[in-house]
Length: 90
Figure 1 (cartoon, one colour):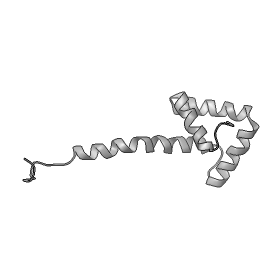
Figure 2 (cartoon, helix red, strand yellow):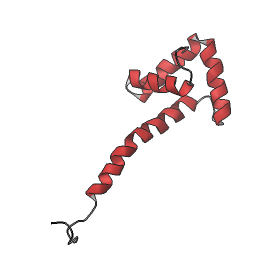
Figure 3 (cartoon, rainbow, N blue to C red):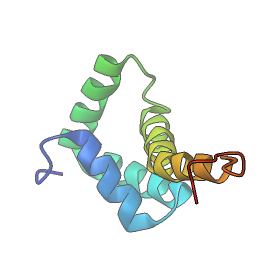
């Protein structure tokens, strides 16, 4: 954890390493048990964000995953365009 200035970067690292939210949650819980400094920083993070410690990691990861999918959602908007009535396109 000491390699990460921002705890959210650590969250992303765990999520990327584990490949799924369920596995990342289990790994994060193990880190919390083993690292008192991480526990302190996590409590502080949750207090600052106004979220419960029980769900802080999961809430962040779900939001992060949803944000990762947004560019693809934007691209799918172009599939819905009807260009057949546009006389400017030849």
